[in-house]
Amino acid sequence: HRVADSTAQEEEVPDELEVQVPIIIDVLAALGIARIGVPGYEADDVIGTLTTRAAGPVVIVTGDRDLFQLVDDARGVRVLYTAKGGVARGDVVTESYISEKYAIPGRGYADFAALRGDPSDGLPGVPGVGDKTAAALITLYGTLDGVRAAAEREDPATRATIHAKLRAASAYLDVAPVVVRVATDLLIPDERLELP
Image (tube, rainbow, N blue to C red; front, side):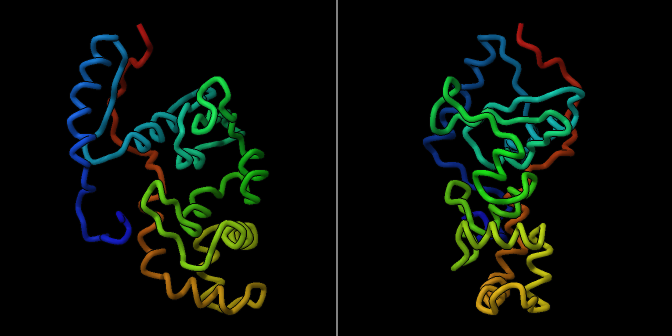
């Protein structure tokens, strides 16, 4: 829904969620747990920026696949993916995990997600392009930009029907990367974030 209405300046927050936020803030403060945020950005973007700034290895604990795009084996950035098994049985996501699970290059998750869609983010994906086709396109062309360029030049390595679907979804593909990509360059003041 965020992509469908690209003219919206802000995402709508459900009333049920909005009343919970002040309570969560109070609980975190009472427990002495550091909290950081940047107006106008999601927590993913703050995590992305802090991960990029980190000097050493990073483990991001989350049930959100969007953060898979931050995985970087060379820098020691991993995700402990808790969506299905909680922390105790979570999957440790590395570039090889992404390659094996989704049949894409380990650093290609964001472009893959934009193509196939992600209902949890309100991303419809390109109609008629599912997981297998999205994976094949990203593997063949490397990036979403590469996929789109191949569709424009009607690269014979891919069926003409796929090119047509990609061209028909051009407006969606113009805005989807903005929703999918995690920001890594927010202006966040240096703060001590260690637990007490």
